[in-house]
Image (cartoon, rainbow, N blue to C red; front, side):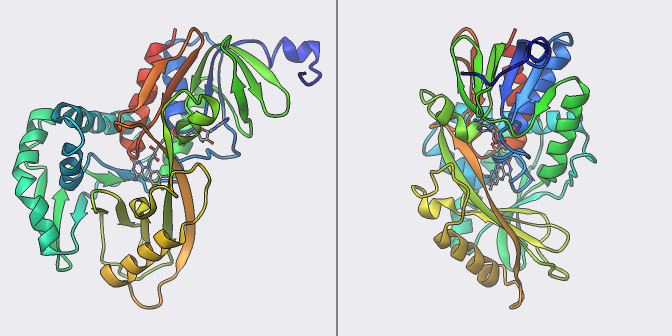
Length: 365
Ligand SMILES: Cc1cc2nc3c(=O)[nH]c(=O)nc-3n(C[C@H](O)[C@H](O)[C@H](O)COP(=O)(O)OP(=O)(O)OC[C@H]3O[C@@H](n4cnc5c(N)ncnc54)[C@H](O)[C@@H]3O)c2cc1C
């Protein structure tokens, strides 16, 4: 039974929407923005369960990347070359779209370059012979020459990627939310969707419901809770930022172990995260929280491999939830007459999130 709703409320706030988007992450807000821009006379709402976005888009590491040689090599064991090439091009084009839509300054973008970091010459030698091959790919795919280059950094072997950079996920999402609001999208925070009926009725926690001609579910790792038929697995990621470490020598963004571990410098603080491969089944969860094995690994890595000074401390720690498909390719699909899904960003949402939102908006009427 619905809450008691007045005639006036039903005739204003609760009038049927043309589009309701579930989830105010990068995909949800981008899809609402692009839809509203191409259909200015429609009524569009984004419903978000949190007071802030509460998934991955404001809780990630802020790496704007196209992928490392080690990651591409690891993917070649599991996927066709065509798939990997498509993904690389998608990331490259997706980053251009993000920067041109929101503005580099507004999202705190810094073109610092990316480094694939190796703990030993032996690990490096397993990957480095493929640099030329992936440089040829990059030229063929995105017309960029000599993208990857072997270097030495603080005595460790690295592969530099000149296309990558870092951004501020909070600023990125704030700018996106403001742009969507200005375009006329209603963003409703603290609004949890309980279920979505086939006729487009969206049932909310607290007994309210609203109607929409089209409902797009952009809840990424939380999609299975609303639509169990969609094959997306949640995956948790842990991050922490240290206190200030004067003259912290690591500058740029760094990937390690096929991208599972990552770190960067934020104004002389180290941000480090990942390593969910150490306990993959425990991390296949949509609950925020800490895994002690992973935290210990990251702490030891910071102390012993990156050689932070003895007295470093964690200033802030948090986790975020991703959504993975079995192929790392996002799902952008129409389920039935009124319901659509855009989710399963599989760990690289900054690069592809806005483009996934734009593609999803293109599927709507
Ligand atoms: C720790 C970590 C580090 C990462 N680092 C990077 C990185 O450096 N670079 C990169 O490219 N990618 C990174 N990612 C991945 C990237 O952040 C994601 O791929 C991307 O943000 C996913 O965007 P999304 O909009 O699909 O999902 P989300 O941002 O998760 O948005 C989904 C939203 O749906 C909401 N929601 C869920 N259920 C409901 C409901 N029932 N009712 C209402 N709202 C609901 C959630 O609260 C959430 O806000 C990282 C992810 C994590 C977790």
